[in-house]
Amino acid sequence: MTCPPSERIAIADLITAYALAVDRIGDADGVAALFAPDGVYDLAALGMGEMKGRAAVREFFVNAFAGMAQNAHFISNIVVTAYEAAGAAQVEAYGHAFSLGKDGNLLEVKARYAFELVRRGNGWLIARLGMAMLLPPVVTAQG
Image (tube, rainbow, N blue to C red; front, top):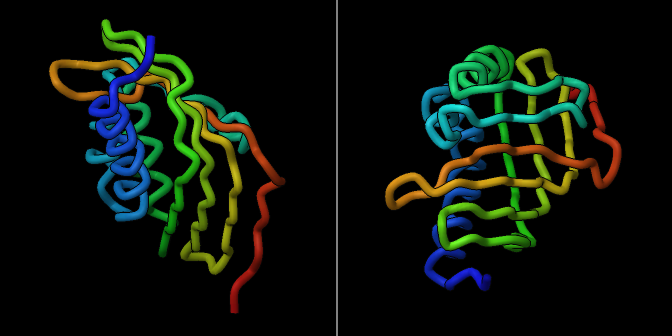
């Protein structure tokens, strides 16, 4: 089924909200709230495994934010690859992310995100978020 424009906008808004929430640093509750209660955050491509469930996603970000000084995510090429009017969608997007650690290391990631989304009420939530590296991650010492 074709994804209606209003749904595409809502889906793109969710993906943008994810990037903004991560870049705020410190709002683990805000990031976790974007995931379904049983949502999965799959960072196996970065060697970090999977976080299963909203509580595990929150805990991951509490720990990750503790070592972060700055973040910047740029997401583009958002395309809905599958859509069901009953409330499911699959989306791919490119992400270019930078994370400066308090230790002075800068991590740069260029990835293709794979989102599986579910509609709950009038909004969309992340059921699964994974990624495939477009180029190998780069870590550079700063200063």
